[in-house]
Length: 579
Ligand SMILES: Nc1ncnc2c1ncn2[C@@H]1O[C@H](COP(=O)(O)OP(=O)(O)OP(=O)(O)O)[C@@H](O)[C@H]1O
Image 1 (cartoon, rainbow, N blue to C red):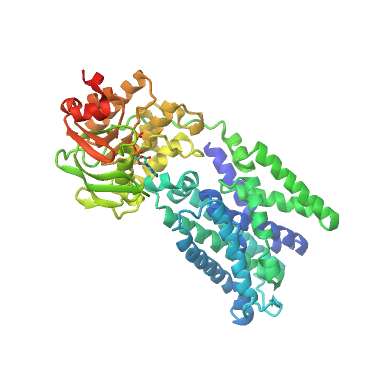
Image 2 (tube, helix red, strand yellow):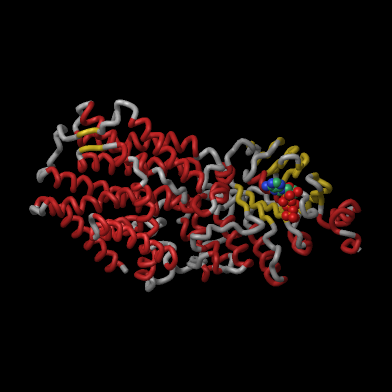
């Protein structure tokens, strides 16, 4: 594997050196311009992928940032007389600033996801086009860069534009690759699959989206600035046309938007394909061919060309070995039993007119297992949602270790040491089982102590799922999906673990297995609150039982005594059970 990796690096190095040398070796301007166009689309498509491919926020407004770059470079060099080269980073900064401002507003509105975000981004392009067209930035006549002194970078002007295009494309690829392999990138991929769960697992979703948007726009802005030098004369109609976002989206989907190299592959293929059919009816034929190819890819390779090809190349790589050696290390509280860890005071939640929780007060001791039981709709899951920050409370207070949680965003609640599972597992469906757990390890407590991948493998092994590590969640049965949920929560190394009906739907043997696992988790020091209808498990595990009914706390105490409470028998267990 080491040899292969060295070979790939050497090949990439040689290719890079050859591309840089091309203008100095006297390559004709025609070929330099041809390659420049490919670099331009590679940069644009790659930049689009950083927000839209990774985080799934499809933007049809990429022309706004590309256009900002074009007009920033044009305006600053023609009207302000700044050196053209200096306008490129300034254009990138301006586009990033614009995206950050838009993102800071838009990403706070939870309803602006999916198609609404796509439409909004398109509207931004048209608003910007109207502003540029009706102000001295353009004024309707366009901006002519013919009088601006262009750099030659030791070759010629076309050679310089070629080198600048190459630089922006390489920077875009390096940035995108760096992001994808980072914690930031994993967070973006999680946002793509289930943003609410990502937030609860500790991903600062707002900050990440704004960051990805700004980086994506900065690269588009830089590409636009170089394009201004290439075209020499910029107009609103050409700059803010729908062609840019459409091509960028098509290129990314064709190549594979969730991989750093995918958009570049798509950009190269489409640019080359279109260049083969230029002029009149040939051009139309070319576009039709590209559209047809895209339909075929969507039908047969929905993830795009690049990820499929890369997986084939890697298929002979050895699977990672599970590291079952790590001892069961849990929370940092393992040696501090006793005392109150969680305090809920008068927790109330209204959903419109429905009072799901009508003022719940209870506390959980450090190292304790507390069972939450009650009839369907009594508010158990809602209480878990309040504690984990999944929904805001209507009123009341929740404190962990004496510190208030109610004003915290969910990812900050996670950072305080609370992890949860979902009644119906909500796994990140485009990530493997290992990546699902790894994400939670990376955003959980005490991450520096252990590599996230090793930690994830450990917890998968602990749950008996090591051999499923490289599978996608879709191939798992319910039991396995629940246990991946479980492993994800454990990988965060929480102080407080909230389990929402992890045993529901399991066979008696699987229930026994889960009871044993929960005992071992508590033995390592983790405090557990679990919602459960399987009474055998409640009796076997719980130190205390809290019974909810219609959003109120009906009873709280030792399992045996609570189960014999006539009120509990009446509303929940029934006389037969008590007998
Ligand atoms: N997001 C929501 N929007 C509106 N109503 C909700 C929402 N979530 C829960 N509810 C309502 O709040 C009440 C409590 O629901 P909750 O899911 O907490 O009950 P539960 O005790 O967990 O029930 P089960 O045992 O069936 O899971 C129910 O009437 C439910 O319909």
